[in-house]
Each structure stands twice: as structure tokens, then as C-alpha cells.
Length: 271
Image 1: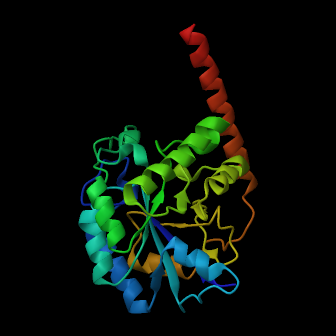
Image 2 (image 1 turned 30 degrees about the vertical axis):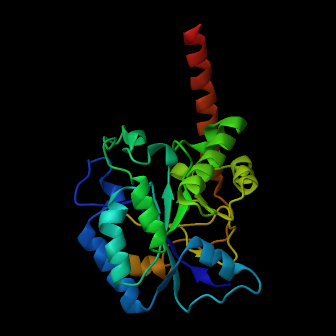
């Protein structure tokens, strides 16, 4: 078994609201992260490359593998992240919620970031041409495990279909919005034809981790280079594969129950 840190980034920008600040890494700090990876000999892979290297008989993984993932398809990936990746000869997998392509992050209204720009189609084309793997992040960025079966299936399938139509290439990587999934959601991701899907779990992944609930390490605004180095080595965090904690399972059940109650109340109010 080979341990593989899968890092989860979001926005790389100098500006953010107070509520979204934990998920917004300053460009200078991001450059320091990439310099550290290069200096320490880490070689980044896309999720497709990790999946291939994890299969029996697949291409061997490099000595120090790392996977860089970026959620939400923010426009700063093209303007700020991509040049730094290329400078340090790194690659990444980018997850895009397709309903917002060419617009703004409307799902972030509670964080007061509904105006944050999302990548335009021409930027997505340029990113893909430059070797970045483009994956799906649902269509409208909901908590998939709170949706009914047909709603969830539509979110999972539509995002894949739209990206493949736009980019004219297979889209095989998926990330659960908010890190929320269930056994049913996982099955629908497999059914849609993806070959991997990302959870969160703040744990070090490995070649034996479940390819459809793969663990990731959260990189936050306050993650210094020293902290990043400890995370890359798996210090102070679990190592996958591991079973979800009972508290996590209970929280998923509570959220689903809350959604049922809210939906029922809304239905009564509309009568």
C-alpha cells in the first residue's frame, strides 16, 4: 500500500468575505506551497493517473506522489493557480459545478460570495488543453445525500454530460459537493460512468482507499508551509482506508431528516 496525499484547495485569491476566508488561500502562500512540493521532490498526478497507478498492473506511481484538487471551478484557477502550477511542473484535477459556468458562485450567498466569478467555457477549454483534468462537481452544488433519487441522479449525470459535450473528451472524475454522500449517492456516481469520486474526511489517502469515497486533506487559508509538510507526511491525521466515524454517520442521517421536515413544511405552506 502506498500513501498518497490528496490536497483539497478552493479559491486562491487576495480577496474574500469573512465567512469564506478559511477557504481562500493567498496567492503568495499558494506559490510557497508549490515551491515546497517541488523542493521536496513531490510529483503531482491527476485523479485519472492515480486510479491507473492504483490498479494491479497499472503504471507505477512516482516515489513521492501527490494529487492536487481544486473544488468549485473558480475563475482564479485560470488566472492565478495555473501559471504557478506550470512554473513548478505540477498538474491538478479541477471540479466544476456546471450550472454556474460563465457566471458566479450563486450557491455561496450565505458566505456573501455569490459574486465570485466562475470559469468561462473558453477558460475550461484552455485549462484542459494545458493538461489539467476537468472533473464534475454536480450541476447546482447541492448536498446530494439530502436529495431524492431522481434529483440526485440528474445532478450527477447532467454535470458529466454537459462537461463532455463542451470539452469533447471523457469526464471520469467527480467530487461530492460539501463532501456529502451516502451509499446511494456513491452507487449513482458509479452508474453514471465516473471512475473516481472525492470525499473530504481530512485524511491521508492510499492506493487501497475506496476510489469512490477517496479521502482528501483540507488546505485552508492558514495552512503554512510547515503545516503542509506535516499533512503531506500524514502527521496528526487518519490514514485511509478507514470506516466513517459514528458521529459522521449520525450527522448525515440528521441532515437528511431535517431536509424531509423542511420540504414537508414548505409543501403544506404552498397549499
